[in-house]
Image 1 (tube, helix red, strand yellow):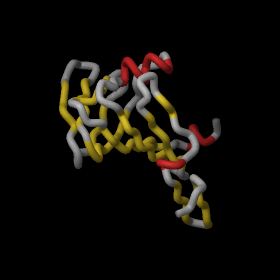
Image 2 (cartoon, one colour):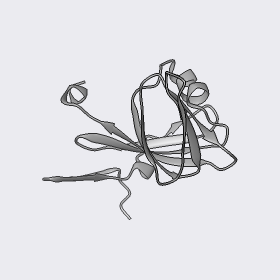
Image 3 (cartoon, rainbow, N blue to C red):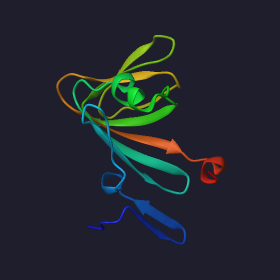
Length: 126
């Protein structure tokens, strides 16, 4: 198994979000890491029971949530948009939530989810 995060060849780039070396640890011990490719970053998070974006991520960054695209692998998460609408996201479901939303783990099982962050040319110049 390759140890480095990003392997790049002409026309091909690959990365393993799980061993990216850029793991973010949240206040409650939940984790998220990502691999940055050419046009998107792909992240994987393991969110512990009780984890909530507004309490464990937003409180850490001091920022409101951004648009978020994800896919739940295992466990369950509830999302709530800025209008108060709620939905349970279960394994096998993809989701997209607007900025200003919140999300939290449902139940006693960790939620493992992928997230997809498009990278614009403006992002690359920063």
